[in-house]
Image (cartoon, rainbow, N blue to C red):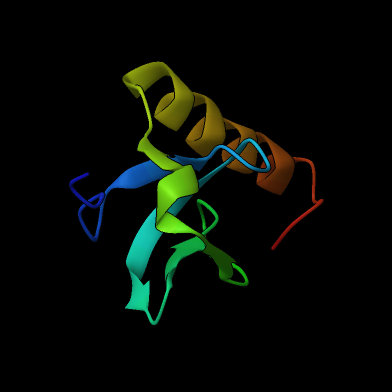
Length: 72
């Protein structure tokens, strides 16, 4: 299995969260939520490339939350 490239959006299939692949450390991929925030670890076998619709939904969700003042 080819690892998801650093800098691309991916889905953590264990949690359903979409994040930006920041790198690989030990046995884990490290993902960061759209718009920034705390990274989380994901086993690479639970990672798949996000579809364009999933990426747009995640980025727009963050933008909407920011406009409502829920995140800074």
